[in-house]
Length: 407
Image (cartoon, rainbow, N blue to C red):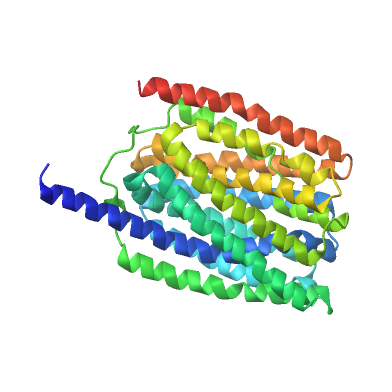
C-alpha cells in the first residue's frame, strides 16, 4: 500500500472523527434542551393535576410517536437522501415545543401533554437521518467507539440541563412553583437556538458525509437478516420493561422521597452514568459484540426495585443509576448494532423499522407500568424485571447467528 493511500485513509479517519465530534456538540446542546425538560416533567405534570396513569400513558405515547414514525422517516431519508434537511426540521420542532411548555400553567396538563408528544415527533423526523449521517463516520472509526463518542457528548448535555434547572428551581424555591417551571422551559430555548446554528455550520462543512465511509461494515448486505429481527424482538422486550424517567420522578415527588428541586439532580446523575455506560459498553461492543448488551441488560434489570420499592433517597438514587447504565448501553450499542448488520443503502430504513418496534413496546410497557403504579408497586416491579430478563435469550440467539454468519 502506497504512502499516498495510507495518508488519504488517515485524513479520512480524521475527518470522520471531526464530523462525529461536531455532531456530538450538536447533541450536547440538544440534550441540554430536551433532557433538561424531561427531568422536571414528572413533578410539573403533578402540579398541573395529571395522574400517575396519565404520566405513564403520555410518556409512553411520546416515546411511541418518537419511535413509530421513524419507520416512515427512515424510509423517506433513504429514498430522498435528504438527511440534512430532515435533521434540521426535526430539531426546529424541538426548539418550538419545549419553550412553549411555559404556557402550560395557563392552558392545563392536556396542553402540556400535547407539547411533550410534539417534541417526540420532532425527534422521529430527525433521528433516522441523523443516525445515518453519524453511521457514515462511525463505520470509518469503529461503530461502537464512534457512537459511544457521540453518546458521551450527548449525555454531557443531558447532565448539564438538569443541573441548570436545579439551580433555577433552588433560586426560585420561595415563589410560585408553576412560574418557576415556566421560566425553566423558556430558558431551555437558548441551547435550542444554538443547535440550529451548529447544524447549519455542519451542513456547510460536510455537505456529502456519506463519502466519509470508505470501509465496508463487517456484514454488507442489501437487506435485514435473521440476526436483525431477533435483536429487534430482544430490544423491544427490554424497552417494555424500562420505565420512563417522568414516572420515576412522579413517584419521588408523590412519596416525598426527594424535594422537587433535587429530582433534576438525580436525573443529571443518571445521565452521567449513562455517558460512562455508553463509553464502556460501546468500546466493549467493538471487542465482544453482542456480549456487551447481554452484560449491560443483566445489570440494569435491577433498577425497578430500588426506584419504586424503597423510601430511601440513597436507594432511589441507586435505582436511577442502574437505569442510567441501561439507557447508556442501549443508545450506543443499539445504533452500533444496526450499523454493523445493515448496509448503508438500507440503514435509514433499518433504523426506522427498529425504532418503530422499540417505541411500540416502550409505549405499551410505560402505559402498563403507569396503570400498575396505582394498583401495586410490587406488580410494577415484577413486570419490569420479567420483561427485561425475557430479552436475554433473544440477545444470545442474535450473538450466535452473527457468529455463524461471520464464520
